[in-house]
Length: 416
Image 1 (cartoon, rainbow, N blue to C red):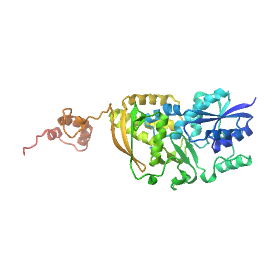
Image 2: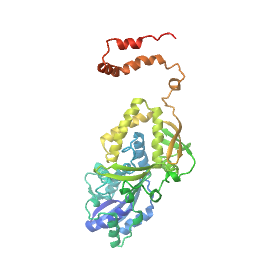
Image 3: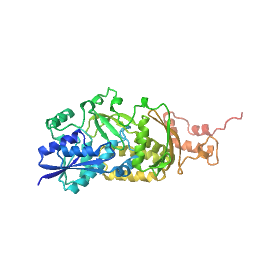
Image 4: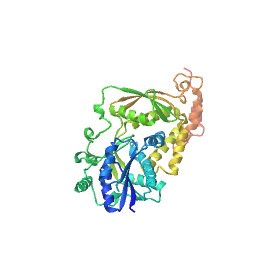
């Protein structure tokens, strides 16, 4: 009986090459599995391509709802960002894809799972750790780590020699990954950090900011417990809302990131990311937190966000620490509800007002007009105690006679 291998199949160049390669190097039957996390794809064409290339079956599993509710929303609530820029679009999808592949492997009674991640990238870690978390008994096959092919050009030639049409063209051979949250681009001119990205050729979801409309577009988002629930007064589920924001943000040049980042494996790499809807949501969510969270909670959550970004980027979603951080995040989000108004203009997001039933902003206290809740005279003792370390250090560096500092502060002003 032939060994059955479940292949994470995208229909792209790498996984199309992997099907004949597996058949040539293993006595196996291949069950191709496409995990739909919202990428732009013609699943009928992709399914037929897998079968024509040698797969015995090809299934498409729609997990968009789970992707949004169990992965994107927890990430959004945490505020996780990697290296100040990357909104983790590829990284956050990989754990779910790995979990889905394990489910498919159990159903198919497969002995191994194969994926197209390279030995240089982060995805091999994300896939492997996700599979290991649910199925430590399954073999993991990553052809890029063992085969002799060294480039996309060699992959294209490999397929041509076997009479298989390559699902890419050399003149547009960026390495891309897309899902409901973003599109990433690597390769070609991006491999030279001194080169400007060729946005007119590259972009799929977003217009370059200079080509965005010469007018402001306004929108309003409503959140409940840190989760966006409506856009411009219309209630939407998560999938619908993100898709709508992608169109609005993309049309206004919002969410373009050009980043040279540190991969987990130690090298630096450059990518361009399009995350129009996600960028809007991160901005709006943070604005709401500014009025709903107290100072200590907000400050500590900033530290948590950094760690969460590292965990997601490094494929450590299914870990006790990530679960604990998510539990802390959920506790902070109990009062993060309200409405945020924004203006979009040529790649920029501009705040246009916000409100919340849990707002900690109190005009009676904050206003320049003195109210009943705040007495300016109360601040004198607070400032002196708060600044006591500063005062003591100054006295040590520039000795003064005992009591001089106190006398100077308590000395009454002369009458005018």
